[in-house]
Image 1: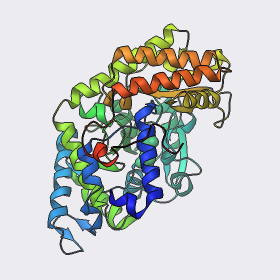
Image 2: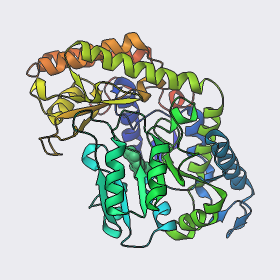
Image 3: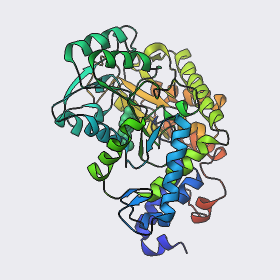
Image 4: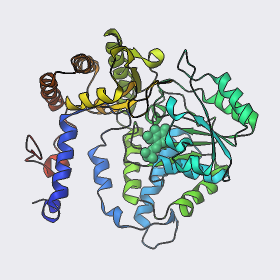
Amino acid sequence: MNPLQTVDPQIFDALRGELHRQQVGLELIAAENYVSEAVLVAQGSVMTNKYAEGYPGKRYYAGCEFVDIAERLAIERAKQIFGAEHANVQPHSGSQANMAVYFAVLKPGDTILALDLAHGGHLSHGAAKSFSGKIFNSESYGVDRDTETLDMDAVRAIARDCRPQMIVTGASAYSRFIDYAAFADIAREVGAYLLADIAHVAGMIAAGLHPSPVPHADFVTATTHKTMRGPRGGIILCSKEYAAKIDSCIFPGIQGGPLMHTVAGKAVALSEALHGGFQEYQRQILDNCQALLGELKRRGYRIVTGGSDNHLFLVDLRDQDITGRLACTLLDDAGITLNQNLIPFDPRSARETSGIRIGTPAVTTRGMKEPQMVQIADWIDQVLRHRDDATLRQRIRADVAELCDAFPIYRNGLMAMLFSELPQQVGA
Ligand code: PLP
């Protein structure tokens, strides 16, 4: 019997339920992905037992010779992939990576200028309820009302006006290329540091399919669990000039012992990004995104900005007269998970929203391609058109599970071994 099942059957059941949910449902949440079994092995490993405060070769604990190997590999691979002089792979999350950058060069009360949360920015970029908005003065730029894209002249005008100490570029819900060189030029003009947060688009940048901010920004932060398809966590990239400051802001600044099992998982994911079809994977994410949004467009849906340059897009549902919140609930009922999302200049509240955000990294990891994207668009359209038809949703849920069955998230390895007698309806 599996030791987890014996020791904690409730968690075992929850885990099995989650595996089943992931297997039978279509994941269109743009921030999610499925790590490889190799990453799972590294994460669920004895490295979780090890304290390793400090950095490789300079630890405050004995017995770090093997975790040092893992961290050095993660650092070298991150530097190689992104062409950076220095990498810190210890941040527990993307938000903590951002926090360390702010603390490295800003004082409380300094001004951060970043993309408005309501236009696709992230909480850790100065939102009032986040540490970043509480400790620092927060100013924002938005997208242009007509094009729904960043207007760099407008960003420059705001920067000249508010004279920030830090400009942040990067987003959670922005589907277009970002002109990092223009941001750097503005930052230089007003004497601000530039942080590029590539949490979402890191995978495409790693594959050379999206412009890289590394040559332009003072600091680059990323998450490792979105398009990078690694364990949950963050990384920071910078030049040698800022290396010591950044490292000391992570430890001892805002973190204690690094999660060495996660650092090992990051090393594995970074290795996967260097080898074995990663570029093809990223290209397919982009192709799938085009196929899905193209089919929704053909069926009359308005796509914010008219399209996408990356792995995600926003659908404006005002013409369909349905809120993002209801759309999200109905689609979840049909086995399709995605986010409700504000659209730029949304007349509705963040609780209701007029839009949904759709991303293709996870379905692409399953091996799905353009024909499956067209099928998914059809299901989304049917659910939203016939919103009172619960029977239709149940039928689509079954069809979704059948499609997912042909594209398993884990094949014959570790997970199958652990959960071999997975029931059809876990928890039912
Ligand atoms: N930055 C951006 C642009 C994000 O989209 C996210 C996560 O959604 C983060 C930072 C924060 O990552 P985490 O959830 O790991 O703190």
